[in-house]
Image (cartoon, rainbow, N blue to C red):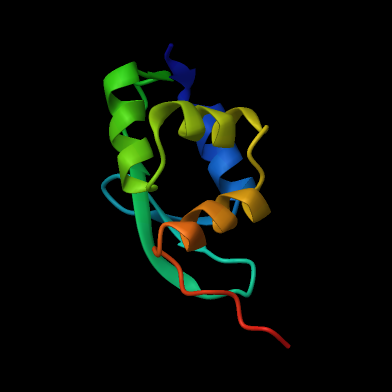
Amino acid sequence: MPREKRKVEKSLSKKGFIQEETHHHYFEYQDLDGNITSIKTKTSHTKKMKDIPDNILAQMAKQCHLSKSEFLDLIDCPLDQEKYEVKLRNQGILPPKKEE
């Protein structure tokens, strides 16, 4: 089911993604320790696009190393940033958390 572009972008920003304004809206993931990671996704910069269609949401999910349903949970809020990072660490995308 499509999601409102503005809601997707706002949710990504709340979950640790930093927006870069270029031709597209690029989002880089910043982990809870403040490190910029290699995880990136983007939304269209065009003002005509109000909703992001399912096929683009699926591509964004893949870029974020999530299934589409997990990505929708990230957008719709059941999946918070801390749980997202646990998933990324379990997949080996992010290094293990350093013990203090």
